[in-house]
Image (cartoon, rainbow, N blue to C red; front, side):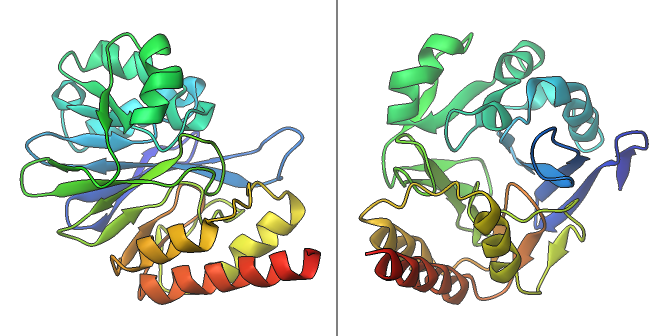
Length: 248
């Protein structure tokens, strides 16, 4: 569903009760065509993961409002502290008076509790949070793909991994949900601007995510993906291993 014809912002359900909000953009000095996604989990305690850039707030607000009253939001989640992750965090806290930031403990410590207008609900590694019928679990993934405080949420009912900047694809992010290859396009994008920190324990972190056997990958840039997530994540680990060996 297109929610704003001028910007092309749209919202689509990619797993049961989980909606992808997509806005195509042109980034000055960056890729000619790109997209930003946020993910809304509709439940007793609704959660939005990634806020989008601060100037995108009206577009994302409009899209969320097509699905539920924005004041019902309980959690404003982020993978790591970056403008496209939480640029409009305080705008969301202003319109959703019961909502709190949701992030890992490191993010709360080093950034969020200073910047946000309300203290964060900081999750420890492996900690679960019930939203009602959905339950999310936090995974600490420092420096995967970047930022010390980075982490991801896994929704157990739908087996959806909210995987942030993993599998970033260029272009406008169409279709909303694909079963086609995204490793090739995401690696082609990374080849132009490598945003990975290449931590020494990258493979171990990817194997831990793969062990959850996700069936939907909620990518922050590009299409969301459906299929055998474990195999795809391990394929990414293999690519990164091979690259490390070439450069050694």
